[in-house]
Structure formats: structure tokens, C-alpha cells
Amino acid sequence: MEYKIPCVILAGGLGTRMSSFTKDLPKSMIPINGVPFISYQLELLKKNGVTDVILSIGYKGDVIRGYVGNGKKWGINIQYSDEGDVLRGTGGAVRWIAEQNLLPKKFFLLYGDSYLMVNYQAIWKIFDNNKKSILLTVYKNNGRWDKSNIIFENGKIILYNKYAPDKTKMNFIEYGLSIFTKKIVHNYFFQRENFDLADIYNLLSKQSLLTGYEVKNRFYEIGSQQGLKDLSDKLHAKL
Image 1 (cartoon, rainbow, N blue to C red):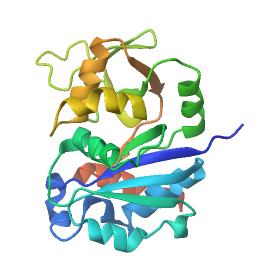
Image 2: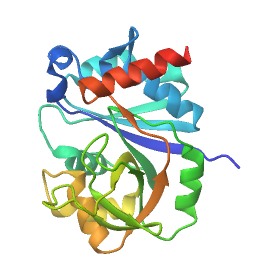
Image 3: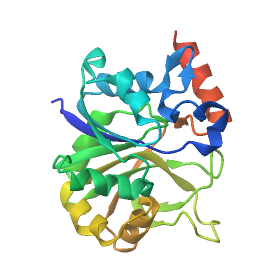
């Protein structure tokens, strides 16, 4: 059985680490082999059964809106949540979507600079079969691609702490794809204003409310120069 999947994409950040590109463009519009990154991202989501996307935009959001439009080119229905010039953080951006009554009952959450080649349908089904309100994909990183921030043992997230001073027991990292329910957003996101999703993950891991799903394929992203090169090489190899 295939599932129809709604997805929120957080694409409103300043992209400061990629300033050579983002002076004139939002990060999602950085070209790869002559094509804006967001086009590859939407194509990948479409192939995995995503039918509806809420694009959270902010910095130079009109450039994204002008290119993507209503999503017809990709066969996806696109709605927008525009933060304007207000910097709310990744958690605050999700809250802002909720305040506009745009959130579906449950949804994938994806960063606007992530390209994740996983079986979205299978992950969605696993979420449906458990009773927790958040599923977080994790990858055994061992500090290779970025700083690990998760203790994951026997299929369970023991602790998520992006800011832990001692990361010796943290071999896993947040993969960049999660599933939330609207209920969890209303219960936890409305207690604060400007905040990062890492704060929510940390809190919920301490309350044993995070379902962990280990992904074996490495993640790709365009949040760094090396990440952009790796993804460009990967996509070029697929041509």
C-alpha cells in the first residue's frame, strides 16, 4: 500500500555558511549542474509519494516562490508560509505554520538544504505503527560528516543533545528527516518564541517521546561547500 505524504520544508534561513551564493539567492535556489537545488528536492519527494508541500520561506523567499509557483511542474501542490524578515529559528518556523492553520494532522519535516535518498513510504508506515508523536531518522555518523549529537541504542533514542560538551558516547546524528503530528506542535511549540528544533528534540528525548529510525545511506546537503560538491558529484553520476 502506498501512502500520500504531506511534507513541510524549512527553507527560510539566511545560509550564512554559503554566503558566496546566498548574497543574491536563498539557499534552496543554489544551482547544481545549472538547476536550482529545490528542483532536485521536489523531484525526489514526488518520486516518494509526496503530494503536498508547505514551503516555509523567509530570506529572499520571493525568489523561491517565483520559481516553484504552485508546484505544478513537479506534480506537487505547494503552499507557502512566509516569515518575512523575522528570524524565528527552525522551531519557530514550524510554530508560525501552525499559527496560520496550515499544518496537516501529521507530516514529514525536511530541511531546505537536505537531499535524502531514503524510502519515505516505509518510514511513514513505521510511524503509523507506533504510538509516539515524533519519529526522528538517525544515521551512524561517528563524527564523520558533522558532529554527532544522539545516543541511539537498541533501536531507541536515549538522548539528543546538540550542545552536549561531552559527545564521546554520541555516535549518531540527526539525519534531517522527521515526522511530527500537529498535536505535538501545539503541545510543545507554543511554550516559546524564537527557538531551534534541537531544543524540542532534546526535551522530548528526555521524556522518551522520540521514535528513532536508523538510516543506512549517508545524507547529502548543500549547507556547506563540501556538501554542495558531494551532492553535485552524486547527481552528475546519476545522469
